Length: 550
Image 1: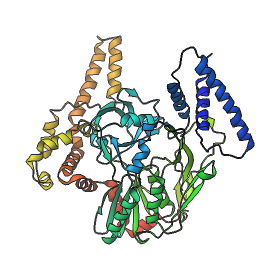
Image 2: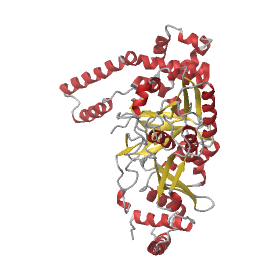
Image 3: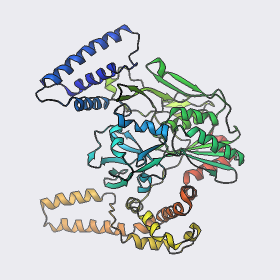
Image 4: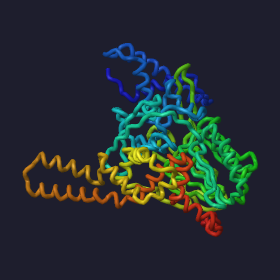
């Protein structure tokens, strides 16, 4: 007898949760207990008949695990079944080190998506960027993979390789990246410094147990340097520990302010967090926070709270929209269930989580969230998931040749081949023919560049050739299009020369001055940072951000 797949798997996962000692069913309503008891008997009966009488003998462990993963797939992407080795993501936040390629992944529109590359990681060096869609991990198609299974495939021992097939933006071209795994050591505050005489800058890359002490040290340093304004860069910061975000907000906001609420079905899921101590920096210090689509979870808590309390101006692009709280339940001595038990809400009442994270037809009561909210000063801010900045600055986009040079590692290999020619970074910047040298270098590299529309053209050409390979009109049209693409590719270097040169110099800065030198160089060409500085330096413009929009 053939059972319905989803029903069977639903029963199995309920059974595992029940026998795992989870407290999520500690609800006093008698009808709920009755429903659980009925369901539990049904679970036991169905499971017993399947494993005992199914036509083919089942691998019980694999069948159970597959059933669990499929039923959890109907919930949000952060609710997952965790085997022993899959606890590395949690351990990373508490220990600060793991073996992998340095990327944070999530699900967007049911697609495995790069939330953010980690600073100075194999992912960042290869040119993989926030928003890239991972089609394959080695030979494994990612369409049906949950986040834990995908992370397990990507992580591995230092020195081993993993190949990712990436699709970027609106392009239909698939790009292949082979990354060599490394020890990913996490330093949460990647850079601290003054960007001018009055403005301090902090680059925070994630929220782990180290974040609060590192931020305290950074803020104290800038305070001693008499910073009158502060820029907190949370771009491509995928989040992490909730407590770290609360501790950092405590350093920036007045005492006794509501910072965050979590709401769920159980009593323990409903919590409120308030600032408990006086801030490290004075309220007179103007504050700007940079965010983008790679800013998620704890980054959205910090930026959304600062916005709701009118403490600072938010600049960049709308954040990712990850506002779900997970709790981990021990099912036995080996396996764990990480399950969403609540949602994050900013002080104004905004739900950080973007919509569409769960199948609505399996939810008994699906509440609609408001789209407009008010800050403590009365100005309107947008809901709907993620944090919408007060000032929008578009993300930097790069042309196909610039991206291909990243993918091929051409910037890195060129610097390695020329590093003995110079004694310092300043000497590199004074070299007149450096860009032309790089152009000559990449002409020797096999570049696989596809322009927008080229892949559909190639597919159409192949299909029409199969129908009629002798039609002169078709052949002439093909030649015309091929010449067009060839002409466009020939002009790419001139079109993208500014970006190519900046990326080349950035790699040289990294070699001669280290990671901090590279960050300092890139900040000089950062449009979002320029916008933040211009707002912070103009008291009238800064104050106008917080005016009541009503």
